[in-house]
Length: 171
Image 1: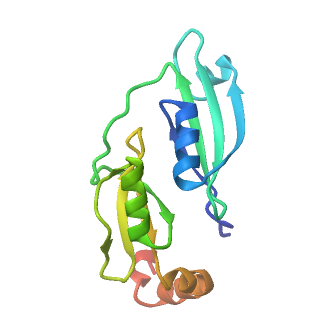
Image 2: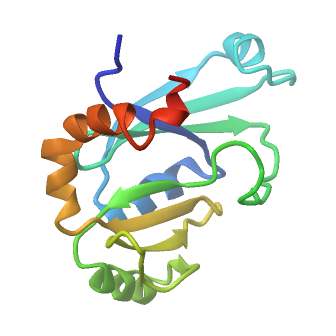
C-alpha cells in the first residue's frame, strides 16, 4: 500500500481573515472552503475546554494541489517558537522559480525573511520566511531537479531503497 500524494498541512491561526488575505496576496493561494464547527464538537474532538468554544476551519489551495487547512479557535492559546531540534514539524515549503525575484518581492511586501537565498550542496536554492503568526516557510527553487524528481522520483526511490539507502529500511 502507498499513499497517492501529499494532501494538506493543518495550521492554527490567530486571525482567520488576515491569514486568508496574506496567503492570497503573497503566494496566490485562494480560499476554497469554510466551515464553522459547533461548540460541542470543538470541546469533544479538539479538546478545547471552554463554555462556548468556537472553531472556524478553512481550506486554502496551493498552486500544484496541496492545501493549507486553517483553524481559528476561540479561545486561543498563544503561539510558541519551535526550535529546530525539537521533535515535530518545523516548517513547510513552497516550490518556486527565480528565488532572488521572490526574495526581493517578499522584502518589498514587508514579509519577514529569516535567511537570504543560498545554494545547497545538492544544487537547489532556498531561503526561509515567516508569516505574521511566525510559521516558518521555506521557499525552494529545485532548478532542473524539479523535473527530474517529477519524472524519475518513483524510480529513484525504488533504486535508492535497494542501494545506498537500504540501511534506513531495515533490510
